[in-house]
Length: 123
Image (cartoon, rainbow, N blue to C red; front, side):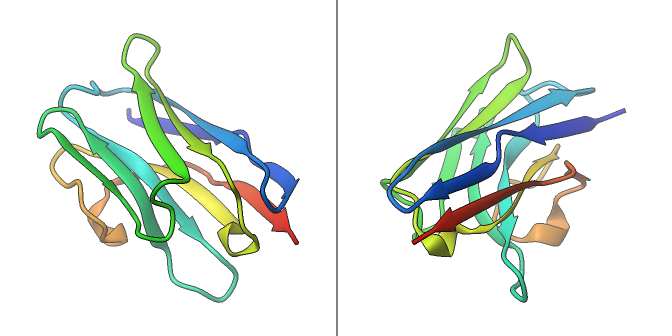
């Protein structure tokens, strides 16, 4: 079974940094796309970043470009999201996602979701 376990959320002040981690199991990073979505209160889920090694695809939402970096450790089956220069508008629950075929920005296209980790950025 595919499982995704996100961690690393917390509360920081604006300008601070956090690193989210996602422990993945049940699939190969070579064939799946992996990424992060977020959902702020009262808002729709937003694709933050996605990495597809097999397709050489990597994307970031415009709002996080230059501040967030996605990476993976295939040997450890871990995905990370390094978040720097955090802003209050980054406050959301962050979800780790994976899919064997899709690697875009549409949330319902991803088959597998982790449980989410809360990130709160205060001004």
